[in-house]
Image (tube, helix red, strand yellow):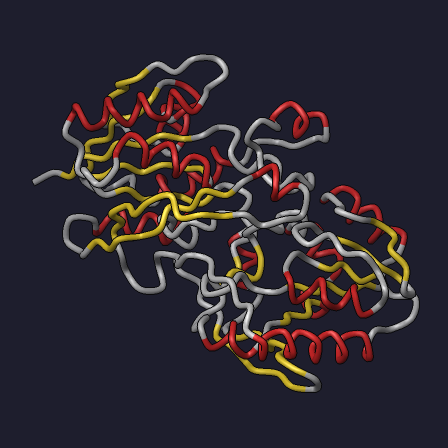
Length: 367
């Protein structure tokens, strides 16, 4: 029997990432002012193009909320069920999902971030499986595929694979922008699951041994820091410990840049980092994977863009994580938005996990 899929796209999802905003909810105008460009459409097309020859009856929304992406992927069999307002809003996502349910779809696929996931869950609940194509800034919920290619694989096999109960997280974006992570469980959605294709939920590690490990990592990183070298320090409690050891006030959930023990940019966006790399070409990037999910790049640190990575050089990426986090993170992922660049990371990454200690972890590239 032909599979029926409802597809919608949040056209502004993820726009805040590269320009240093913690999310896009309520911040679209500011994101545009800072030079942000939409990228959810491209992420959706990457997925849909891999499904062009699959026998699926698609239901979607008009224009930027789905129809344009399906047409760009050269998929012919689709029906527009919902006409969103201009600009689109959360109410449109919920109304579109209700239209999909009325049409009896087998699966709801959305392209967006945690905010879109909450809106979809509000409308769908557990009535049908859902799957997210990752296009937001943070994506702490466990309803997303690890990248667009993995999403295509999950959609292709939906109906023939098991679903699992997966967390939908409610992240307080106002708190996040002020440097405080306040997240709560919003609900459990039914999500098609294939190991290493569907991402896990974020875990937070706060045990005493973990705090000591963060101190050890910070001691080692600051010991090997080179003079006259730009250090781009990504988000996370482990990386911020490095700045604190230097006597600097970190941006917990943003990206800072330091050189010779001084902050040269705080909560920097992509364009600021590119300009700094022009001024200081000798550079290192310090990043930490999201606990349990394993994303080193592409979740919450889109400021460290493909352009920034290429200019700094992949060999200059330093990954740090505590032993506890690594024990709960069997695989690492990179999802920069540039699939060719992602493959350049190779099959493993060396992760600093203590004072003069490191572990080599496997990097998975679902394609």
